[in-house]
Length: 396
Image 1: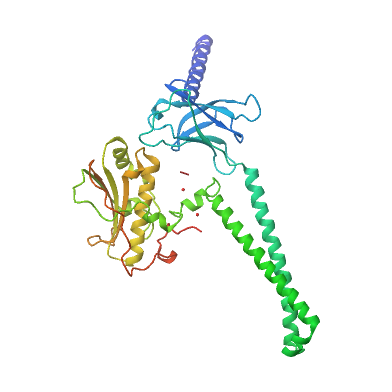
Image 2 (image 1 turned 90 degrees about the horizontal axis):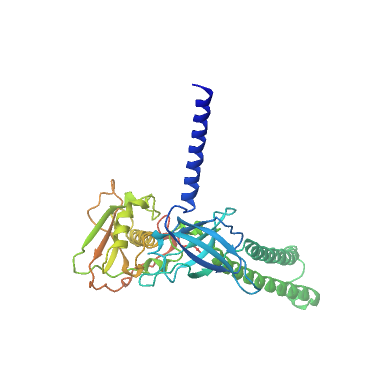
């Protein structure tokens, strides 16, 4: 091959690589797709930069195309967002934009929540609602304050313990009697001071614990710790009955999806999901079809503790419902849960129970919520299955 031919081939290959690069970058930035623009306003964007990712339901769906500072003090920063046309049907007037962080020290991105069914669609160029981002410096300052208060309480407790040890040593050595204790003004004064110090220390420690619990409740919902509590299935045992019903209607369902617990969950006594993609067909049906309401019905086999299996089925039903609600766009008030506990028919060696999603036609009346039978044992932490322990509390 001649030098000219080799040079020509090199130029053609270089142009092909450049063209492919332009196409890949342009596709990521939605340069070759139909898009529309929305705006969101924040007091502080927490380091968000132009070109940052925009996610809708955790899926890359757009790009931050610009960030404009306010024209005068007191106004907000405006973030310009380009979104794929495919998101126009799920982003509504009540959708909320928030600035999130990928992990602890990752890049910032904009997350937009699904809108509610029945809400009007947003228009091109419209400003949507927003919520302030979590500022790391504020979080660290609050945590430092908690630690300082705890350290002071520990020091005071140590001082009070030293006073008590001193008094105990005198009693153990046989110095004085109960009468001497009453009549010895100096010893009585020291003991009174010790008691006052201990009382003040206990009050301070109680205040510190209360503040710590309040701050832990706030921390549960930020990006640092949300994953930790999410893995445990729910924040409070009351969540299990939040969307439950008393039973199934007499009408036949128009559609049914059936799964085994072994397909969806990672253990016989666990409500932690391992293969959510198995639910995609049922989620797509709920999102794209009209229906009256649907019920996630869960049962286990006859092997195991009756009360624990009842709680397990309620927790599994709640976890399946939360996944469908968070990942598919439909009215979440139409999806209910029903934990049946033990049901005959399952083989304990090959199956851990069943999950059925029953979809009823429009006009079907939803049964009322169930009540615990009289004399039934209350649900305690010991009764809850692995993976659904109540936290003292994961879209991500």
